Length: 306
Image 1 (cartoon, rainbow, N blue to C red):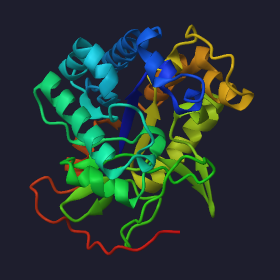
Image 2 (tube, helix red, strand yellow):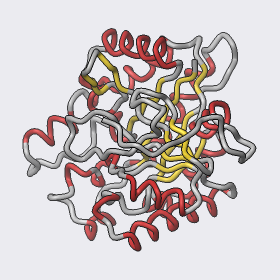
Image 3 (cartoon, rainbow, N blue to C red):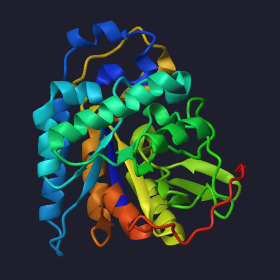
């Protein structure tokens, strides 16, 4: 049962909750901490892999913001060199459904081509900032040459998360959606308790939940769906980052809660599931889908999910 560790490589001043207080023009003057924090994550993955009895690597997918890649190309090279997948997080970290079609296409292509130039390999995956996905955005991602997207979060309690028209024969809890092309959607994993969807995939929810409770939820998801997709940001293991004191209290709470314990919780999570495979999103798609380019076994009919 594979676990997909995914990291959205952006810095503390680029998060959506702080957009009202930090302008794009000020980014070059801000303290860049993403490089150090991402190297710390890479070392963490190497260390946990070295302790595995089966000797298998702990692979992850790093969705890298183009703005960061342009300033830290050696970091992007190092991610690939250590055996992880480099995928795109866009260039400017703008909500996709708020961009014009032309601007969105430019952002998708610019980040994709930049990362491919740095790594020397094709970039096949994308994740929208703040999970800002909808049907039109998904079509733009497909049209710009990506193989898969990982932007759908089924939790409806967050105002920014988007929604998708899912294949009619698949459920919102499925670990992989298959569209004609083929093209794939890897949703973030959430916990389904009857009719309720509880956010469980990562981020602030992971930092807030007690480790034992979170692991129990992950075990339930693995039993039900045979895989678990987790997400995190490099700034989440950085308790020393600058504070945006002018932000409102709820934004500050969500961003800063339990930063000091996040790194240890991630190590504990990986160690607790040492018998599972940790694979990249690209490898997951190739295994679960059909990598030879033919139509997959799913017959896809467009219908709106509830």
